Length: 588
Ligand code: PEP
Ligand code: MG
Image (cartoon, rainbow, N blue to C red; front, side, top):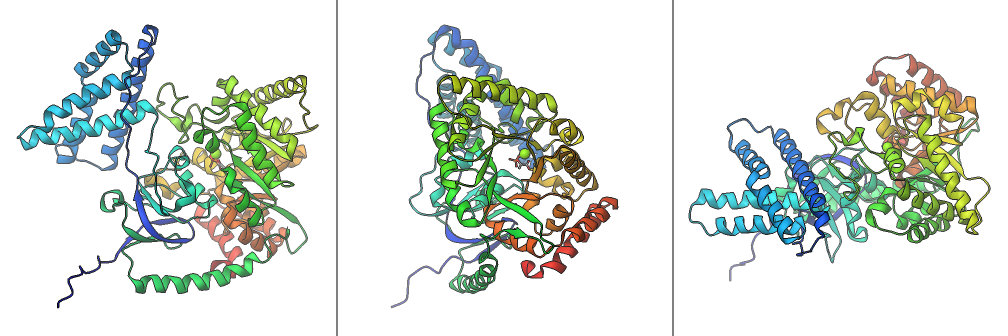
């Protein structure tokens, strides 16, 4: 009898850009934008205006989103795609919808979410039953727009995905607030349509030590949840329906790579001492409480950057006690290592929709980091008090993000001192000296580093942002990714200035941006005088190995030469060839 089993689906190779190393073989879970149906919540008469303001804000962000999509797809005027976007924009700007929603909210005193959703559903129902294919299509347009507006209205970016088995997440992009909603214990990798090596999805993948590949354009449409894939975070490949031969080939490649890796891992808990005897502190960056074990195992000597905004996005309504408990767990699980907690760096791409009263035209130049914290003193106080309470259980540093000049540091320190005094009055024992630091990630902070240095115990260079702000290159934008150059002379000069200011003031200076993880740049970083590198946990052993092969005076000569050069490519080549000469084994 003939074998009726269908032939296996053909293998397909999709090529993107690798941003976090490792490989994974699993089924995919495709994240689609989604929202739950709203309840019919009643509101007080005085809340009507606020409700309408929320709807206007949601419509405005949706409009911007659709316009961006239209630009991204390069839809030509008059084309079918362009017509779809035009239709969507018309639905958003439809005055009669707005008027009807407002009337319902005012007269029936129900939430705007429900009023808007009910009205749009009515329109959809009407169109759905029509014979005319064109009009039936309009049903999909209204559905799409309604979904977008509802997501923004309700601050829900994604469904909370439930997967019973380990999966590779496929999505257009993963913002930090999307990522915190995932069950990370079941996520084996990220395959994304957009993003870059310094987008937060890539940073988080590195922290969690899982592979990530970005720039896999169109995969959200072509893949479906349940498809089997092999994700290669070294080569930037996504193999759909991998054959047994492909899997076997990868297995043998992995075995070889693991053997090579073991050599660097053996000494990971030892100090990183250069050939001339200088000790360089290598720490890890972290975001989640459960990462403590990965950090402890990585050989990191401290956590040079704990991004607290991820915990906040996970549980935005946490009380001071709950936050203090979470921070204390981190401190205790990492003791005696120092943990540098960065105060909330919300804003930019790390948006807490509850705080975003109005959408900002330029979020990365807007209400972000320390600006937002100082503008929300009650929220900031809660965090500072929680940090001070956690500091009673181990070595804690407190670091302020997105500092643009001295005043913000003074204001933040004043609030910190008030919180400390308050806690003492309440009977808590506050450690004598808590180290306070500033991130240098805005050019103005680097240029006034001498002034800021007088007020802090340490600097940490946030080069992910420093590069973006110095070169006016959006760190998330594919189109200008080629201009995002860590070795641009302007960036090196700002680093040099900051190091000089720190030295003169006698304070420590380190780096926690992704530049610190790049093995090609290690000689340059050491030569520029950075002796604390905080890197992705998975990179600690390799960075330590690299440092052990370097000689500081040679690195200083390299940095001096680099500072004289004008072209980013030339500078990159200088440090790359130095690195290749000193530790070729790390590039095999
Ligand atoms: C940086 O900007 O380099 C940094 C470490 O902070 P984040 O990536 O969270 O902006
Ligand atoms: Mg930053």
